[in-house]
Image (cartoon, rainbow, N blue to C red; front, side, top):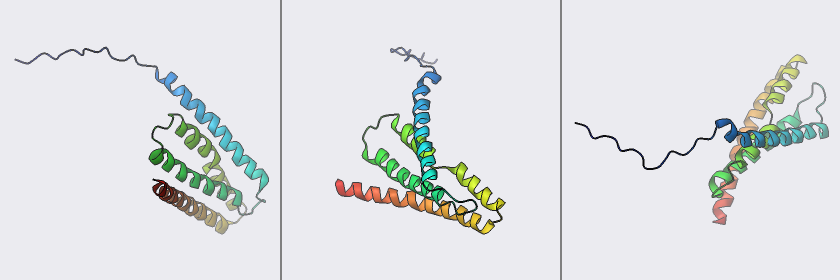
Length: 151
């Protein structure tokens, strides 16, 4: 003979529709993305790349964006006790996702190839990848050290 399962004393919490719960997240990502993409576009206007030239602006935008991602994620995950639930989607996904750009990076590589500059395209491909990874690592490491000294 088995023991009957006891029914829960508490009533289950009402479930919110998934769409309504995600609407604020989608909204802040969109607003943040518009801000980040606008900043990237402004950088391309301030420092335009000549046709067929090395795309320094996109490289530096991606490197700087990756460094900021390194700082931001360490601060949010290791220094803040209870960050607002929309902070990471707004700034991390939205602003920094809109600022850094894989699509422009890929288009720049294709343009260099189309202009008959495969060596420059390969150098750009490798330099961006390496510099972005080093930037995020250095920024995260430096941020952790600063936070340790403050404690």
